[in-house]
Length: 155
Ligand SMILES: [Zn+2]
Image (cartoon, rainbow, N blue to C red; front, side):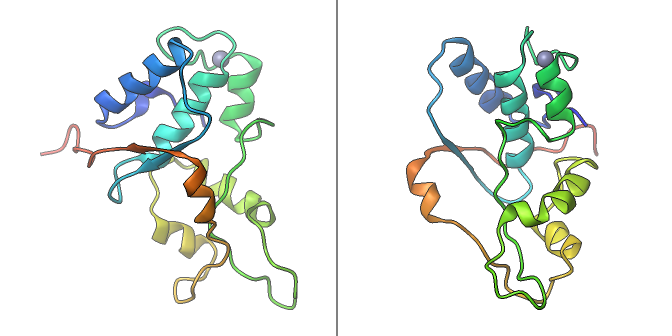
């Protein structure tokens, strides 16, 4: 499932700022999308990755070059997802996000506007504390605040 800037609900200012940063070759080495729940932070991040890595971008990613095809399957080698995970039963090893990449891609393939609770339900750990939240990595990122998304096309 491809995700483009044109698919982002609201957030026009953020999208235009990100597009300009890429077009002017002044994008920070790491960005941390912040803001309230439900504002599309993940969707924006994926659309940005798609735009950044597209080999034939115009106003948006092309959707058909080799990079876009890989991104549509969430298998591009330059994209790494980090998300909360749970311990595997019977294993003493610390889990890492890649242990659950199949589940992550399954949920993501249905759309990038799922909630944290949807992810916990997918892992079947609604009532447990997820593991592997790497908050220290956030200190190496440039914060990029996103506003609350406004519903589009709804009354
Ligand atoms: Zn492309």
